[in-house]
Amino acid sequence: MFKFNFTAEDLEIDDPELVTQQDEDQIEELSKPLESLSVSSSSSTVVPASRLDIQSKSCLQSLPLTLHYELAQIPVLKQGTGAATAISIDMKTGEKKEIVTIYKRNLEDVKFQIAQDDDDFDTEDNNKTKEQEVAKQTISGPGGAEMLALAGKSDLVKGVYEGGLKTWECALDLVAYLAEQNENYDGKKVLELGCGSALPGIYILTQSNSAKVDLQDYNDQVLRLVTLPNVLLNTYVRPDQQPAEEEEVEEEIKEQKEKTEGEDDEDDEDDEDDEEHPEADPEDGDFRGVELDLPDSFEDKLALAKKVEAQSSFYMGDWSGLVDVMAFSGDEDKYDLILTSETIYAEESHQKLYDTIKNSLKRGGKALVAAKTFYFGVGGDILSFRRLIEKDNVFNVKVVFSAQAFVRREILELTFKA
Ligand SMILES: C[S@@+](CC[C@H](N)C(=O)[O-])C[C@H]1O[C@@H](n2cnc3c(N)ncnc32)[C@H](O)[C@@H]1O
Image (cartoon, rainbow, N blue to C red; front, side, top):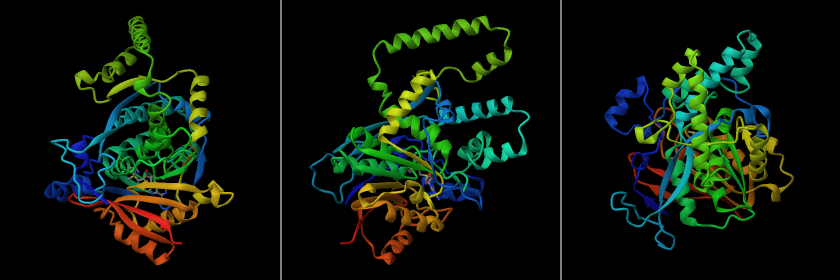
């Protein structure tokens, strides 16, 4: 086991602000906003598990023309230190670290798109029936406005929005741990449960072209607006691998856009929009970060989605029923590695998460569960999850990573008993 000594604040990553009215006092007092979850309300019905077809028209249409991204830079112990215990990294001196860089879509950009899509939905379909409105709420989860409110004010709404828009601290621990382990993932089958921005799964995708990395999140919006864009940013549209002439093309598009806008003076509404949401420019401290254009033709988007799907399947909905949807043909068809981070915050979900791991892990495989030891606000904790595993007596469990913080973070490794 090795130890890190940093928090998401050190990394300047947008981990949950976690501030709500009812928690505000407590959080201020503790000065540790990362340790508490804010929960708005809950739903008694769950979104059923299903496979998300990323080649579908609706999914491709939700890919924006331009992605605004930032870098998650994750310090990692250098391979070969051999000291997996009691080593901390001093973020100030930068000793004994290397950096894993993963591109991630900017949360503000996601919110911006959600707001836009919601406007479009409402303008396009003013006469939508009550049934359509309900479908919008329940089949695809909450609509844009609701998602915006949720992402802004609450960390999760149980059974409705489970927090996947943001990147959580333990996801970074998991990437750091995987990078430190430096295993060969060629030909391996990997599943990230409750992936959200999916940094751990994406890390593995960047390490091997022949690994299959499947991604699951409760909310299809998260998969479409965050997970898929993040996969693209780190594989087929990596910003650092764009041809040099891209800049020229970008410049040309910009000029063209400015020209069109100039000609379009009469459209006051559009002009107001542009003033409200100008092009992102990090130099000016633009909140949406650096930008990258995606192909705009349906065919090109489809080609990208086909490439992604050759390596990754996407699953949405509740963990209960997920194994049935995956329909394994036998043990060999199951996963070599299952990853999950910040998914044990609700004790009532422990059993279904555990069952999903148990029934989709290959006999010789392992699962890594990254979590805080306790979640204020919702009450889930790693000890009760561990007790549940030990009671079932099917897995060996050990702590392979621990980070000292106000609330300790750990990674549990689960392997089948002989
Ligand atoms: C707090 S987010 C963590 C996201 C990401 N793993 C990270 O660490 O950044 C919790 C994730 O667990 C998933 N989740 C929570 N409860 C779930 C359930 N009952 N069924 C399926 N997924 C669930 C959601 O998809 C959500 O993305």
